[in-house]
Structures are given as structure tokens and as C-alpha cells.
Image (cartoon, rainbow, N blue to C red):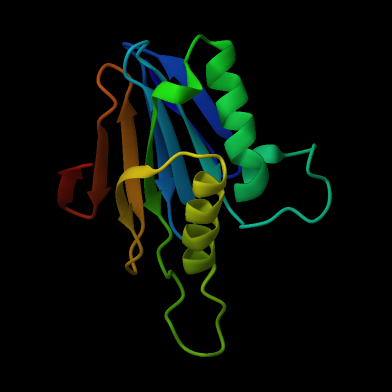
Length: 154
């Protein structure tokens, strides 16, 4: 079964499922416990929550990471065994000075929050100027990244 995660949402599951999302400037924060074959993905849209944190914790980097950890730990994952992968954060609207690079801000915030909770990023596919589709295999924790006709695993 493939669980599709929408913008601002969080999806969790266990082997043999997979989790998929489509990214532009948003970032996918992917956590996986190899021992239990449990993982999840947060499709974050913005770096920091200002208001209504409880209403949609998956929308913001600072609220999505703790929520994702809580959800996968409830399923049986162990925080001390989690691997972290990041994908997305494209500059979808060009890099001229009139545009705020939301993708870059999402990337920076994700790395800061991951470090704050004592985890580190094991692999990533970040930035650029094109969107990507990612699929997390909960069988082995691999993440397939598709950008146009380009396909790679992180």
C-alpha cells in the first residue's frame, strides 16, 4: 500500500508499506527506524509556526518534527535508532531579489530543528529549481527521488 502525504501533513507506517509525496519549495522530513521498519514523513510548508500550532503541526518545521517523532514512537519505533533524510526545498519561483526563497528557509530550519533534538541528517536531496516526487520504502528506509526523468535513491 502507498500512503500519499499532502502538503502540510504527516504520514506514518510500517513495512511493507511506502509513503509518497510531491515537493516543490516544501521539504520532506523523513524519519526511519531500521530495526522496527517503522517510519514517517512530514511534508512541511513553512519554517516556523506563529499561530495555530496545534491546528496543523505538519505544516511547520518546528512543530512537524516533534509530532512525527511522537507518531512513530507510538507505533513502536525508538528515537535513538532513527535515521533522518531530507528532500525538497526547491527555489520554484526563481532566485531574483523580489522573491523570498521559501525552499532555502525550509531547508535551514529543518537542519536546525533536527540538530536541536540530537539527530543528524544521514542523506539528502535538497534545493535546485525543480520539484520532485519522493517515495519512502518502509521495507528498508530507502527514499526514491524522481525529478523529471532523473531517478535516484538517497
